[in-house]
Amino acid sequence: MKIDNVEVRVISPPGERYTWSHDLPEQYLTITLVRIRTDEGAEGIGGVGNYTSFFSDRYTAETLRHLIPILPGLDPLLPEDVRNQLRPRVFPITPAALAAIDIALWDLKGKVAKLPIYELLGGSRHRIPSYASTPLLPDVPAYRRFVDELIEQGFRAIKFHTWCLPDRDLELARAVRKDHPGQEVAFMLDVENNYDRKSAFRVARELEELGFGWFEAPLPDFDLEGYCELTRRVNIPILPSGNWIQDLPAFLSALNRHAWTCARTDATVLGGITAARKALGLVEAAGMNCEIMSWGPTLISVANLHLMLSSPFCTYYEQAVPYDSYEFGMKDVIRTRRDGYVEAPQGPGLGVQLDWKRIEATTIHVFDSSSRG
Image (cartoon, rainbow, N blue to C red):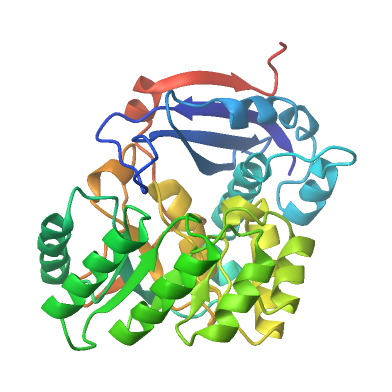
């Protein structure tokens, strides 16, 4: 079997836009799709998401323009070999471009084998607990109402994206814990790399007193010294954002420095499932857990769900809410059940089907491996 053609398609979904910090405009979501076809009629789909402040983005697609001519003629069932052919020799390549190809290859491989990806990766569990991952809301009362709605839907864990301002963030943390004083609902806070070290320590210490489950991204991911200091001084689990350390050697270096209580990354950050499964091996060797990101559109989050299901070192699936904005263009979606779990997709490969009519209607950029210029 050989790769015959590779299509790249950029879609700009309609609908409400969100943000995750007081100083960040509402973001434009762009989904870049890679569709790999073979000479035997097999097909695999992969996707990555981009978030930009003013317009829909095309840079991942344009990076792919320079990669996909390499693919025709290669064996699609050997993702590691394909990755080696695509590896950067001199200048770095955005990991998202590599990830879109790699995820499509794993989808194709699963379809040929008639197995879901998590089983190809050696996973045996079929469900995982879920937490709701909120956008920025206007005020504390809005969050309190939203928490009640989420609990009613079945969530038993909620992570807040907030203003990323220490005093306002703590006001929210105190309010939700007052509303729910027991431990029946786990709460987490994500402040998107926005604090300085002094504020991070102050907020971490109070979140610990409030019994929060973890404190995410208090500092920029590359401030490993600051993370090391913070994890030494508090007992609440400290996680990075997981977005900025984008290759395995840097990831391993951070693990070896014990910068975090728990690791965080995902398939689109590290360049695909092939690299991310290696990262999970490094996490296991370090004796840690890894909270894989799965926030975002269904096609992207499902790839990371397969990674979680393949590893005992991931404790939660991250469910982006409200649902509708992240389910565009899908016939199959992933939703948290009333028992607080998400189930494994049933089909082979990624296990989800796209609504191609809606995808094509919102495409803003498309080309394939036969295109020139």
